[in-house]
Image 1 (cartoon, rainbow, N blue to C red):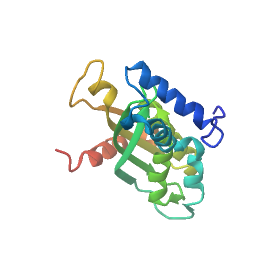
Image 2: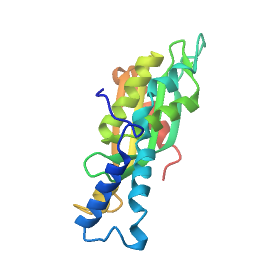
Image 3: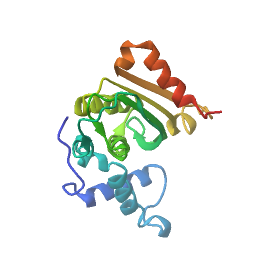
Image 4: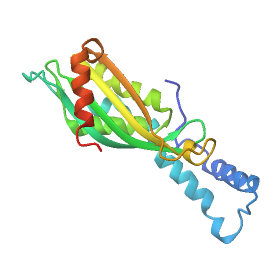
Length: 198
């Protein structure tokens, strides 16, 4: 991964001036009362929304591995909320993550999977890459027999601009190990994440 400059190293004054310039570009007056503090608010908001750049997703898992568990059935975390920013337009996309793995002697605390999703999502993303990063990190760090990840999200870049298609969702998936090679395992996962949906 490329080294990135964190907010502590960034020139906050320059970032705020860039927001003022954007306000001028769209025809606003950044000195008017309602906008005077907007540049600061925007910079702080982006620091929060992209804080995943300054956290290691692997750390979320490494410290929470439990070894020698005699369990090899599917473990599923379903309907994990996530929020991210599209790297093409800097507009939000958000939805649900469904993640399953087949343990191979190691299991991980379930809250740590949710934390890892949060770290990857809090970066500029495309949904396809986010899906793959989650699956590959679980595969690399837990070394299970298989991993399955499905993300379902709505993208404001599709709803607010461009095609302006309402009620549209994007679904992406990544299947590794036994989920890729065994149809019945993959189908069990898909059936489980559909349970309870309208």
